[in-house]
Length: 141
Image 1 (cartoon, helix red, strand yellow):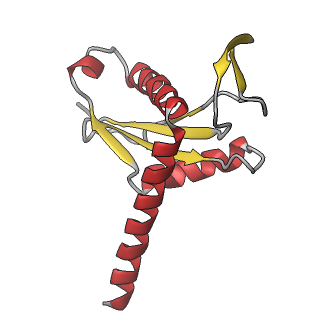
Image 2 (cartoon, rainbow, N blue to C red; image 1 turned 90 degrees about the horizontal axis):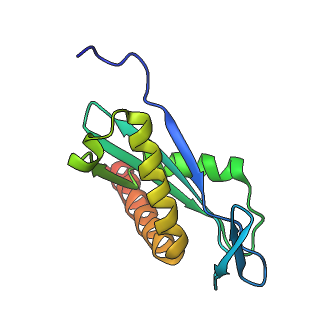
């Protein structure tokens, strides 16, 4: 198999908009009511060399205006900092292309974050602290 000559493509997905009163819609159809109106962006990249799917997440505060460009930038930084990585197991391996693997994983991850955004916010805080500790340890050496 020839070596890839360029970086694998990065795919982005967003959690649905939630109205101030908690109502949210999928494809224009009322889908339920949520307590949290925080929005999130997910960046996904299939790494065929390591046979993994890497992802990064950014979550916008409920008090901030959601900006897709800023969300993409933060999710990309999170991806490169190693927020999450899963092996391409037999389920994903059966899909015929990295494009399909990335889109399926992205959809699954966006739904997971939408259901439990606070857990992902906590994980982001832990990873930021770990990265800051690593940087300070390197700086002190």
